Length: 311
Image 1 (cartoon, rainbow, N blue to C red):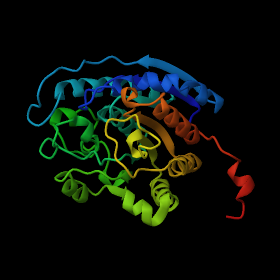
Image 2: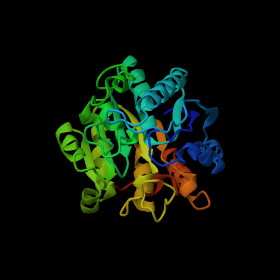
Image 3: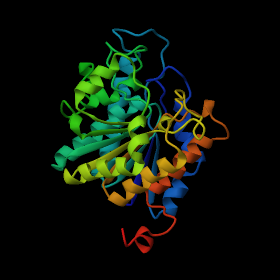
Image 4: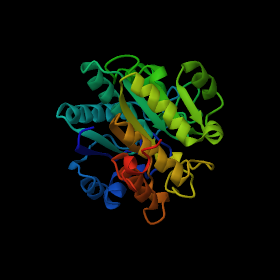
């Protein structure tokens, strides 16, 4: 993982029903994400916020809300993130709703293909985000990015990527899942993606969950793209999201997840999505996102090998 980090603001909530995620990038800046990264030894370049189409007021068309606008955003994001990676930098996409990850995954997948390196995705989310226009109750594209990444969706959304699928389904690992739409479930089960829902995490623990995932990613010698939706966290610690679902990751579970990702040395790109300051209290959700990102970038209580040499 390079220590040259690029912050890329994506102020869009066009993929969601509720307004407010467009303020997520500024919430992360106010919470001190740049200062934290510099403290962790990173060289930080904040390229500012990307510009895209505004939210039109219109009903879904063919089961998609704001399809053309989401495609435009995704292409803009993909171009920007790809450019930063070609410059040898680690991109952090600061969302914005999770539909924006269509663009980030497209960029990372294209870069990895050119490097002849597999890509794996760690999708940390309360939702599977595996809807299509035929299964989505709302038509919101922030419920579709994993399906798009693995080859299901509108042809113009799929065309954002360098290939179809952008990512092999078996290279997608989801954790913290606890809300899946009725007709979405069959697509998830049939897809071949790897799902660690909250029941499975309750049964085996976050440590074994991450050990299994990171072992497989390492065996594949893959670039790990982490896509972190803050609604993966329990609402008691992260209230500033539009789709709060009880029973999410605790603070310590989330910290261990991030610490183990860092220790693996596999992560090469990051999304932070769905922070909605309009629904937050004193910017607490952005603050916890920055706190968890610090662990992704190596903050430790003690150097791990100094205390755990016997394990």
